[in-house]
Amino acid sequence: MRNLGPKSRAWLAPLGIETVAQLRRADPYRVYARLKHSGLPVSLNLLYALIGAVEDRDWREVQREQRSAILLRLDDMGLAPR
Image (tube, rainbow, N blue to C red):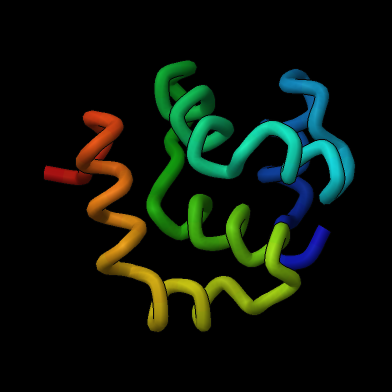
């Protein structure tokens, strides 16, 4: 999956996510929330990478173009960085 290296893929595997199609069905925001709640040291860069994988875009482009919208959604979910 684009943007996701071995460590990220290892974190996703126990969630049953090994393909982009599985990530799309799971919703990158919910996946990020599950990983964050599991205690893994996830950062916003992982969420950018997950969204980029789904959209077939570089994570830095996602960060640049969607950062505000992403932060608003995370705030709605109670996951906004403090």
